[in-house]
Image (tube, rainbow, N blue to C red; front, side, top):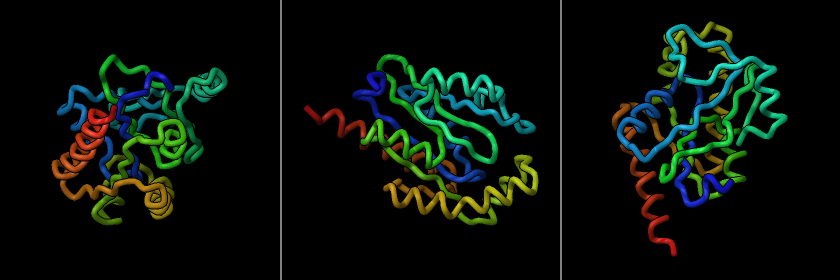
Length: 190
């Protein structure tokens, strides 16, 4: 992946309803050197979800991109495909990926020194309420809640840094510190 060589690559993962999107928005607003690789998905857009949250495509379009080798990683989750297109960031930008832990595992194989951040909710009840408030139906909420423990266990096994989103500004600062540490490490390498 020559487009990622020498760049800090930050993978932000976590179960649904923990505030990853809000944190990513703030990271991008505060750091002009971060570039978000927008994920593709075949799921329908949620009520009140911004159209730029994902690139919403049909299954045939997504599968054609898979066939062309157009994804850095992709998974099927809750009967929908989602994935990260091969990034083409601007010169000098570091790359931010908001992807699930399975996708993080795939990217880590290509970028072994990626910064891995797992965002978690302060409680399962807090997470459940966020999922309900964003418009997920009861069946989707139940399936997402069921996946939370296994996602967290996989993240711990992979060495993700765990950031509890009990206060957005605190979570953002914690991730900014991880990014700064990686950038400093890269600057000090010969």
